[in-house]
Length: 132
Image 1 (tube, rainbow, N blue to C red):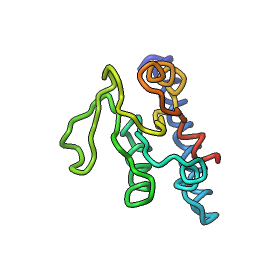
Image 2 (image 1 turned 30 degrees about the horizontal axis):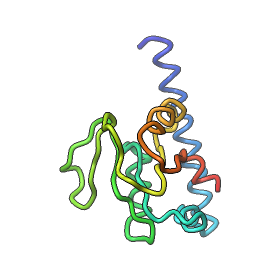
Image 3 (image 1 turned 45 degrees about the vertical axis):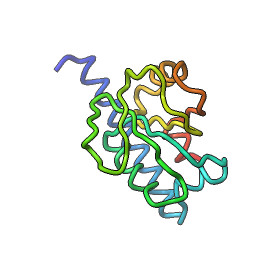
Image 4 (image 1 turned 30 degrees about the vertical axis):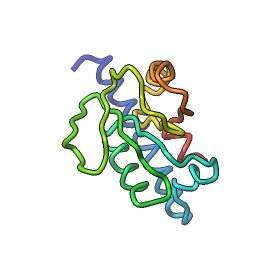
């Protein structure tokens, strides 16, 4: 593995560890990530990225007052989950939601710039949600 690739992977896993650690602190304090959405009056959201964080995030929001309308993922297939719609990254426009949360934390800036062209929804990083 090239040094640059190794360093990028290392950064990604450090960010992932920090996010999961911060999320655990939220849970230990008896709070939920749902609070962020309720307090900001965001009822319908989309999740960008269905890797480790995206999957766990979806499970936390499932069966709450926050409705995950769809998931945006590079490797999407409609048969991943029976109860949620998947959309590809290359879609021309995303369906209307109150917010899109990007769980691909290492690539947030690039992704945010790209999807802001395709939606009027608020765009948040997963870090924004757990740091609330």
